Image (tube, rainbow, N blue to C red; front, top):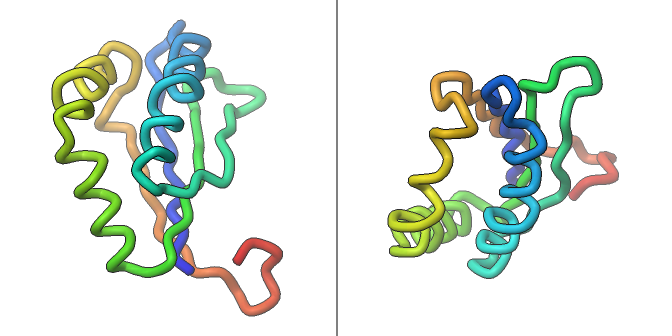
Length: 106
């Protein structure tokens, strides 16, 4: 299994709007394309931090799902253009993780 821990920097005052957008638009759309979303989180003491975790069977699956999501007209024309109003793309950190043998997440 391959995991992505994605940390975003949300623009000040946009956290509630961003969380609503993620939970009602981005996550359901990505799930409809086959992505497995394990969770999404906000930092308790910093309203500009948003973190979520996705899981892929392997690199081939990740590449196929990236293609299905990010090359779709829905993403390019409707979803993607809304993101810069809420998120600072320069503050994105993506960590690719592999579970240890006894990790509860597999």
